[in-house]
Length: 142
Image 1 (tube, rainbow, N blue to C red):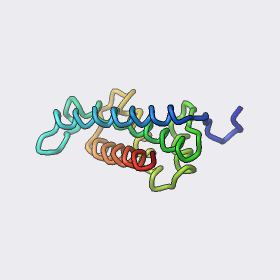
Image 2: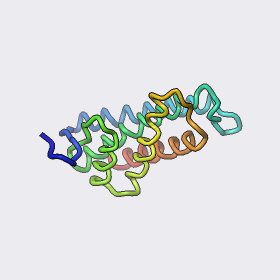
Image 3: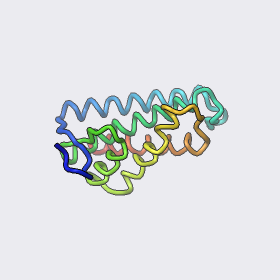
Image 4: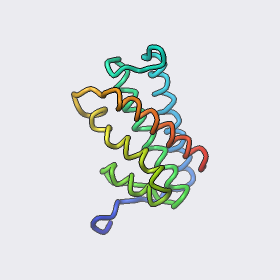
């Protein structure tokens, strides 16, 4: 049992780590395809029918990349239902500058995945930046 105030983690092996990296890259590739289809002059408007899906896929890419990074660095990944815990686990495995990207994605997850409210321009921009950064770190780390 996980002590109170400590994020739940689970052991991950090389297969898990590589599998999460493959998923991270796939989610990001899918997000980039939506960005390409839905953007005008290189900008994906939050009113585009693809904007929310783009952000949601960026969140999925970032979470998967963070899992891969954490397993490579510590052998463990965040396994709790609270994605905010994943930020703490990633920060412990890396540093604040890397964890801030996952934090940005976790903050927009509910709006993108569960809410009836649309994402805004900052959500679209920040999700893309954060997902690309985390996938790049995962690729460089693994």
